[in-house]
Amino acid sequence: MAWIKRNLFFLIGSLIALALMVVGIFYLLGQINDENQVTEEIQKQYEELSRLAKQNPHPGNNKVDNIKTAKEQDIALREYIKKERAIFQPIDSIPDTSTNKISNADFARELRNTVSELRRSADASACKLPPDYYFTFEAQKKSLIFEPGTLEVLASHLGEVKALCDVLFDAKINFLDGIQREIVSTNQDSNLPDYLPQQKTVSTPLANLTPYRVSFRCFSADLASVLASLATSPNGFWIQTIDVEPVNAVAEEPNPGAPMAPQPVHSRPGAPGPGVAPAPAPRNSAFLNEKSIRVTLLIQLVKPKPTAK
Image 1 (cartoon, one colour):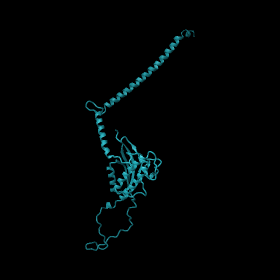
Image 2 (tube, helix red, strand yellow):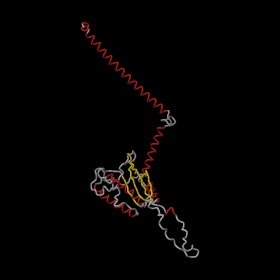
Image 3 (cartoon, one colour):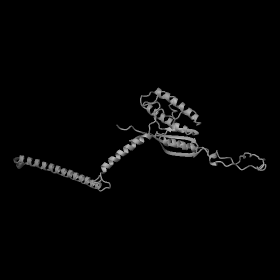
Image 4 (cartoon, helix red, strand yellow):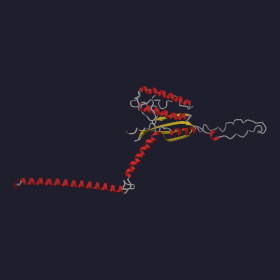
């Protein structure tokens, strides 16, 4: 203890020096570890650069400039997208929402007018409709106030449903079983047969895809007309799936037990004798025997987003 008392300052200095040495060692080890990590990262980057340089094609050399080629292809792709937009024209909303903000009264009025117009179009084309059919807007039929934030979407859907119906009625289908669209309002979209509960509009960098399911009855020639009209439409209708089945196949089969219609009896010279029916005249049996079919189309309406300025 006497030695400690005599050399107290020396002892304190030695302990401080020892502590500093320990801290220095830890700091040095940390720096070595960081340096190793940096070295390892540099090695990985070098290996990745070497891998890319060996690829075919690689970023380029004095003969091939792949970066320039990529830029040229990007310009060509943008020109192609610009050109193809001509066949994906937007469908006008009902009422028009592009210039003015619409009110509840505006939409309610236009909904009634549009449904009346569609019913007249169906009558003019001899297309039958379900009783009191409201073209997917049954839940909104008697509404005067609509859920906030849904008017613009409802107006867009009304215009799109009308465009679809115009195609169907122009093709002279026999019966429109119904149309289904996505749910817009959780409070007012209560008539479930009008909706696609599991499908919603899908947004991509270039366009929105809005789903519709259409079910109708027609003959094969009418179906061909519908498909051709959708394919050549400027509004971007994309048929995702198609399902075709006969309508009342069993009920429409001829009854084998039913009596045959009486055949005429000919007595003029050269005609078959009494009671002998003449051979039937040739006819297009395939056309006469064609039966109505039920068609269900799942359609995605491609709606390009505005181009960036």
